[in-house]
Length: 308
Ligand code: PMV
Image (tube, rainbow, N blue to C red; front, side, top):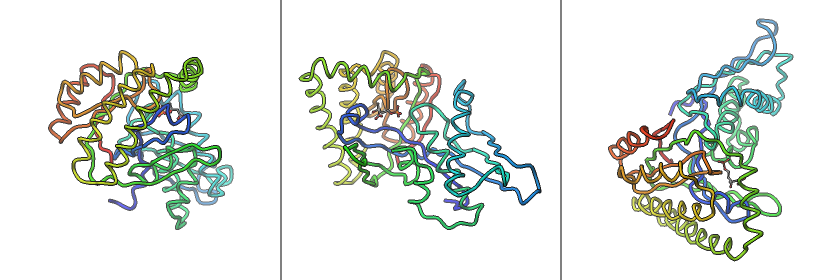
């Protein structure tokens, strides 16, 4: 890999959305698709001061405009980490790469990580991965974005727990957007209400989920190529659990079925749900191609990448 490429990876929740809210562990997978940042700093008085962010990432209708303000703000926080004041020294950031900014893929964290890397390089600072991660601090997404691989994540009463894991093999995936963005706060709030009304129902689903999680963790520990198939089966099971939890929707279910009919080994929604993203696990590149084709007929946006 080109060391001068300042990358921040995207992420998808492999297993555990919603259950993670109630302190159950989740697995978050970094994808190979990444945002790549370039940074130019002005010398004293060579060009005007201030912060310019040029967004040359793949286009998602409506998304960039909606998030432009947030993007500038989070970029400013990264500058601040490096004690850089753009009122004193001009900073130009160019965002590129193959990661399309869609909600649920961790695009904002990928920005911050790639900018932190590019900025450190522009300042001639030798910073380690932990510092990049801190500079991009937003939560779980930035950790996946910085380190890649798979992350076991668990909220606690205090600091959340992170455990970095490495997959024994790459997992080819296709992921697709429903084109619908649901509010995480609303969906999480709705699950909370349902859980309060019927604790036994919730606990049953949580128990089913923990079987999936434990099997997934065991599969990573055991290693080997069989992991792809195991993860695919577990993705199918996790999707069914999320359907019962009422966080999937017709659009997601249709895409999951379409992917499976086209030969995917397994598929599930990922993230908040009731819209948002789904991913499909494929055996190889040919299958990935066929699944992507099938999904392209139904979903507004479809991408091929891999869990790394
Ligand atoms: O939609 P995303 O990728 O931001 O993930 C939300 C995950 C939830 O478990 C639904 C909420 C949370 O804060 O953990």
